[in-house]
Length: 181
Image (tube, rainbow, N blue to C red):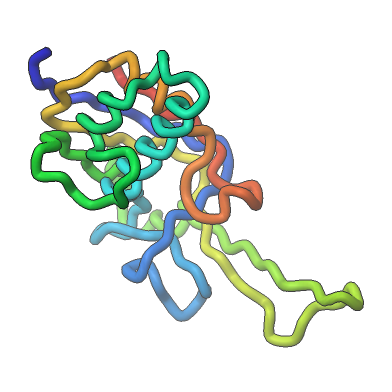
């Protein structure tokens, strides 16, 4: 198989949050990760890790659909942490907005979501109010460059991703990930 560049899209159907130290600000406790143009994105290492987790999950229950060799060749050893293997040629880019948005409109891409911790007495715990910045449903585009393995196994792994970002188990980040043909 020859090396190829694969383009994929992440279509978000709900608010989502991918945070990091670069997104911190004084208005919210947890800010969305933004690029230099104040646009939300998901880092390439995060994408690679999520796809790897999905591939390992499929492999665990259906090893005939996603092989050990696919996981080793695309991501590195199955049981290793997310260390870059110098033998792995794939380069996962960050997933970003393709559209250019004027800076004066970027604030429209975000909302604030408040939450608090409830104690045993069914009342809010003091100083537990937390504000998380979330991004509106958007479509992000990313690429995997120098991909040299089974595209069908990659497609299955991408289809297995149904939620992305932090707090996805609290209802955020519902999405569909697919290769752009």
